[in-house]
Length: 419
Image 1 (cartoon, rainbow, N blue to C red):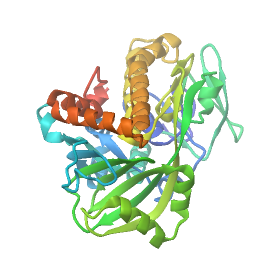
Image 2: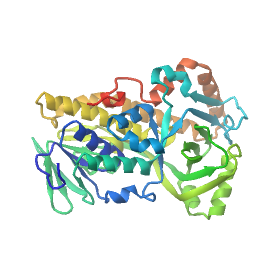
Image 3: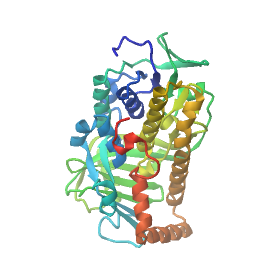
Image 4: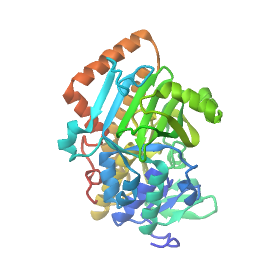
């Protein structure tokens, strides 16, 4: 379908971020006719300064991206995470061979028979994911209207209409809200949200290290929140450093020397000398959970449905699960001659994703509250809990399987199969 062919659409996708672009690509690959709409120019989203974050892509999500034809573009930029070391303390004790009683060790080899030797996940810079998706979306012939923000949405019995700021109106049986936590589509459907801010921000930076990270991710917990050292290609790492919002903004604006001084006190010396590469970014942290993820003619995916704390690195993976489930439901309905935007069809998607989204959001929230404090009694309880989990191999393997996206009723794309 050409950029000018905006008639006879199957679905309007509001939001051309990673979840929205993946959904549009998956829908097009399955024979549906999507259009992508986003307020930012598509090429602008690919710039290194647009998004400084990196994402832990679960092995099941990576299989999905391969099935959609994006894997070859991502593989040169994907760093395996073969181990994750979690420490409760002021230094990365387990990681720097100062083993503390309260630490967790997750090793991909423990579940290698289930995953076919996959790592626990792949760390990929968001700009590379966006670039790969943009190329695949264009190659699939998906129309991309950007900049072209959705200003209003009208929902009728048999169609959804998206009114753009430039005056154009798009119509389709279904509109998908993928525009993040401030979703216009969600508001138009009258879907409320539950959530709160944490009073924290994630300070994100990329660093180069003197010694190789060995494909190991480190996360340790300070009273202000988690500090993560996540492996990237070329002996680099992505830092996600949780602080109060005021301190986070001060760190972003500090001189290079002051920032590095604060960083070294938390980073430790186990990976040698550290140098910061590129700009620093600060992202406020909050929880936002939609009360429903469907309405007549409307479906929500990604952060429009569930914005979670990045403590477990599962935000994008949850969104990709949404994509895989929704596309499969839509394709099966279309093959049966059903109305893909009807509430009866969309409820199948909601039932598939409702429990998983709510359970994961609640789990991450509880995890943050348990670890982002320095109460002596709480420290004792969580230390005992971490030590116990570390000694119960079946429980540890269950956590790794769930984090890798290998548990439950998986859509075909997450199994690496075409829809």
